[in-house]
Image (cartoon, rainbow, N blue to C red; front, top):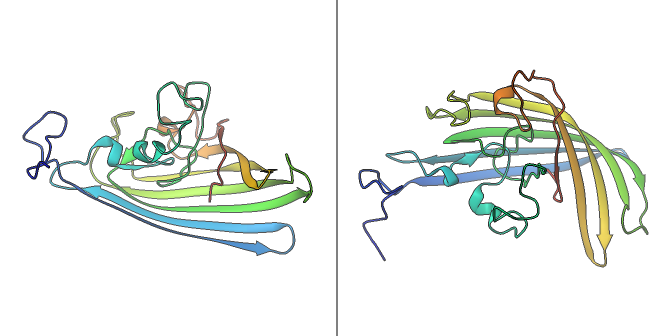
Length: 214
């Protein structure tokens, strides 16, 4: 037990201690027989005398690296869902689905909204017992003066919007969802997932997950 702390990044001049806290609340409400509305509020901060380690900052798109350690399909470089051919989104953080999964900030307040419509319900089916489409938007205000390593710029207000597809499955007693999201609008294309030079705010982008977004 080193009560003096462990030097961060090999630099003894950095204070290795920091404060990190997150809070979130979500709600889901049916609207009639086929519509459903979901909302999520999130706030997170990681601060101290020096910037918190990158992996403990608040990530914009989803779960941070330490949260991903619980998922065997994500926790190593050669994992099944990790690579240039996959755009997997593990829910968490500010939940901005259109942002690069590596983008993080010292502090953020976020609001995620989703309107879902059920198209098909088959209670006895296993592979596809419900099919739904969704429209969503994610909004966030970040705080702190740290520039983004991806762009060298400071990220302030960020937002995205798009449409998605939801497929519910049941294997034995296990239920799960396959979620495809197309964040077609991103307010900062330079921080977007699947970005390319010269991208506009409106462009084709896609992420998927085996977990509900909200």
